[in-house]
Structures are given as structure tokens and as C-alpha cells.
Image 1 (spheres, helix red, strand yellow):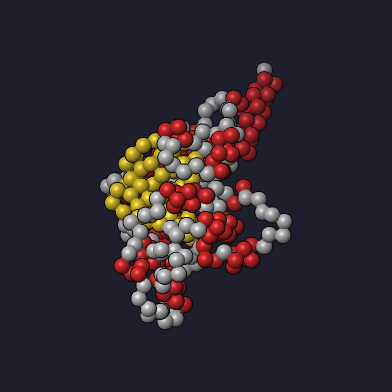
Image 2 (tube, one colour):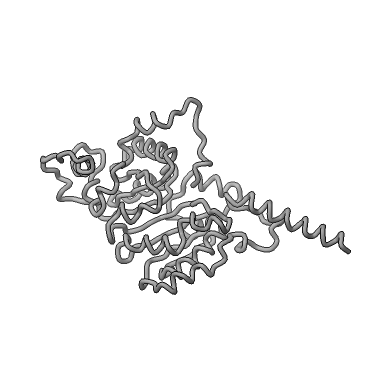
Amino acid sequence: MGVTHIRTPKNFVLEERLERYADGFETHAESLAGRWAEACYPLRSGTCDCRRDGQAKMRGDAPGSSASPCRHRRFDHVELDLGCGKGAYIIQAARQRPDTLFLGMDAEPLCIAYAAQYILESGLPNVLAIPRGADSVPRVFAKGELSGITLNFSTPFPRAHDVRRRLTTAARLDAYRGVLAPGGTITLRTDSQPLRDWTLTQLAAAGYKTLWTSDDTRAEHPELPTTEYESRLVDRGARVWSVCATPGDAPSREQLESALEADPSLMSYLPDDLENLDYVPLGMEDAVRNFINRRRRAAMGARQKH
């Protein structure tokens, strides 16, 4: 979810918010690579020194020496919501699955401020935000550490020249492969059929096996948490398009390079009759409007020639 869709109240001061809700996010995330399940068990209980020890190590301080119950207990699974926005999805997921640690990662400080606030207000002991972008995933997590990665309503970046900014390029998917446990999954949910369909080409090039796709996720997978943001999109006429995949055999260099053969413009994945679209995916409104206008000008020019 893009930061442009978050409204801030009057007199909102980002730095003050980040300081107030600092316990809801982890600034020294790299120090916890390989031990998230133990270091964060349980969060906000007052009994765990592992996160503080990791932070002290990053600063060069001496870690605490007291024994902690969490050194002998851990979460059963660790899952990452990449581009978590305000954290609504991970909070709902954490309520449903208390045995799993849910981590929400976002590069936008505004998103982290809100996510941390809502996380702390929820009181849940198994959810935390991480102020990082997608490129940091291989540094923040160890090999096989994640049971799943979700991407909920990621910004589609529809223009061809922005293709590398998408979170589901074959190169990024290949990087995610390293941190996924055997049988781990990547699940994309989006209001953009073009992004879902383009992502299918990237998954194939990155050597992933598709477990399921859906053209109406809310109807076909009601077990997945539904956020207020998603509900607002559906009220505007959106359908939720999804794909869930798991890593297969590692791809060859040639296979990865084949991802570049897919048309990078998401406009190419829209139907021809754009004027009759019932819903334009969020983030593609300007591109669709410009495309329609270019068509109309071309048609008018053709008529004038005759």
C-alpha cells in the first residue's frame, strides 16, 4: 500500500510518533537474522533480553547476562508482510495465529509510525514492524528463516521504466527464495489483474511453482485476513486477484533472463476496451486515462485524414 494513501491528522509530527511508538518496530533488524523466532518470543512481555542483546551488540555495548525463558522457547513460524503499510494485515493475522511471529516491513517512515502505533495498541505479543525496504530482505533474514512472504496491495508501478521498482520481479523473487523455508510460500494479493498476470511470468522465470491463483480471493479464500483498506477498494468495485507460489528448482541464468521477455508495461495486460472498464486498479488511473486519450487523438487524426 503506497504512502500516498495515508492521511495524517493536523499537527502530526512524524519524529514524535516514531519515538512514542518505538517499541513497535525493530531498528537493528540485521542483528536478529537467523534468530527472529527466539529473540522475539514473546514480544512486550518484559521477560525477553534477546532483542536488547542484539541491539547492544550492534552498538558495541556488552549484552546482558541474565538468563531468559525465551532462550528455550520460540515461535513455530516467522512470516513477513513486505510493504506492510499501516500494519492492518499483520495484526489480524497475528490474532488468528498466535504461534507465528508476523513481521511487517516497509521503507516509508510514515507507514512504520502508524504500524507501530497500531501494533502496540493491539497488545499482541507476536507482531512487529521493521523499517526496511525489499532490498534488505536477504540481510535481515537468514537462509530458510521465513515460512511465508505476503505482498498485499503493493504499488503496481505500471509504467515500463519503473518495472524494477515492483516487488515481484524475477530478480527479487530469486532473492526471496534464499530466506524461505522448504515449502515456504509467497502470496500476492492485489486489486490489479495486470500486476498479478505479469507476476505469473516472473514467478515462472524465477523457478517457482504456482500453488493456486484466484480471480476473486475474497470469495475463494475467506480465511485470509481482510483489512479496512481492502474493503474500501472492494466497495469501489475492485476484485482481489491473487497468486500463491513456492520455490521449485533453482533457475538457470538463462531462465532468469527470460523474465525480461515479458512485456514490462502493465498496460499490455489490460483488456482492449479500456473505456468500458468497471474498475481501474489503484495506481493505474493516470496511465489508463492517458492511454485512452492517446487512442482518441489517434482516432480523430485518422478521421481527419479521410
